[in-house]
Length: 196
Image 1 (cartoon, helix red, strand yellow):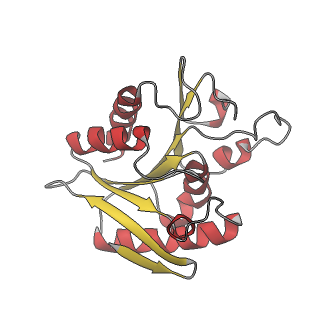
Image 2: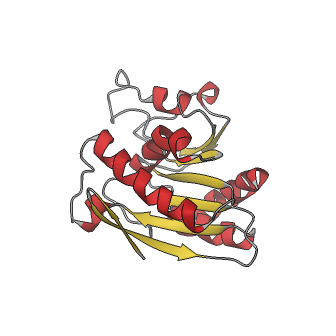
Image 3: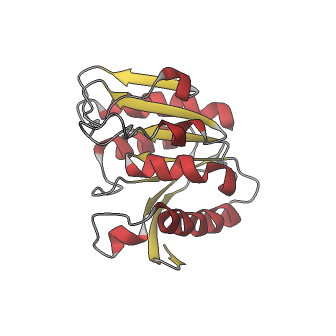
């Protein structure tokens, strides 16, 4: 399905289960897609746990851009998409998240969209080689519990455990989390069901 925003249309790939426990909304990184291995694995494990899953391709990606533009514009479009999804599933608890840039969007907008929690996959703590440009504030200011799943070889850094409700660092994984995506899916599914 497509949802119109002021920044263009967003596409939602929706997988519903009978009598869902909650709604999990996921999105991609700056240059990625909702078919990234970790996002696919999270989808499969969440569905098996009785969670309906919406994977959102943001307007900038549908327009062919590799960069999301300003955080304000990206967040504005995201909030429109989430409002439409929440209206479609009234009363269902919401957990939102994404990988890399998508994790940042989920953290920044969590309170405004009414999310119970955030799943941050490969949270880009800082640009590669630039630890002084930390984005840890986005984790701290989410206003809800945040699960961070990062690889120990991520050139974007690994957040401090104090900046998230839970930090899972996977050995041997880089920023793409594609060495063992099934492990990522297991970790996320086990964590999100507490918000049902």
